[in-house]
Amino acid sequence: MIFLLEKTIRITMLFDFYGSLLTDKQQQIIKNYFYNDLSLAEIAANLEISRQGVYDHLHRSEENLEEYESKLGLLAKYNKLRQQISELETILVNKKFIAGNNNCELGQKLETIKSLL
Image 1 (cartoon, rainbow, N blue to C red):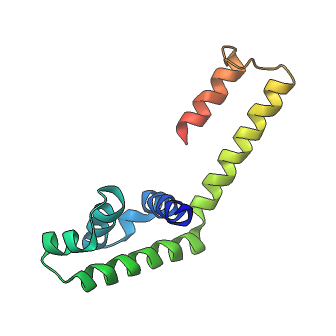
Image 2 (image 1 turned 135 degrees about the horizontal axis):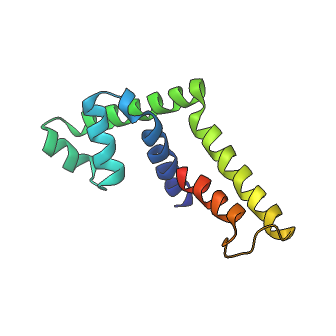
Image 3 (image 1 turned 180 degrees about the vertical axis):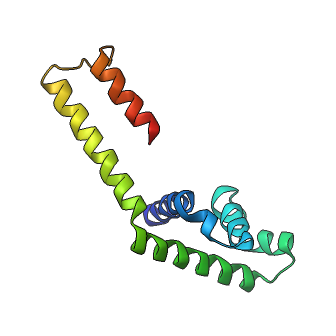
């Protein structure tokens, strides 16, 4: 079950970065399956194509998203940046440069950067 959740999170994040590179039909199928939680049969009925056709589009879309990530690496860079910001925040709190509530100027700047991600 955890693997399915991790896969769903990964695909939705990849879709956020690369979804516009997919065809309209692929975008629609990804949105219906991962965001709207529709079954393959429900998507097939809505699009008036076979369940197998939906499965093929979904599988191809996932492969395309993974291929874009392997070439461009935007998700990996995003995750690394989030990790580095989190580590920076921990260091700043531990060194007492910022308080846990981030009321100081440095803490506010860090929160602004985090909100951009």
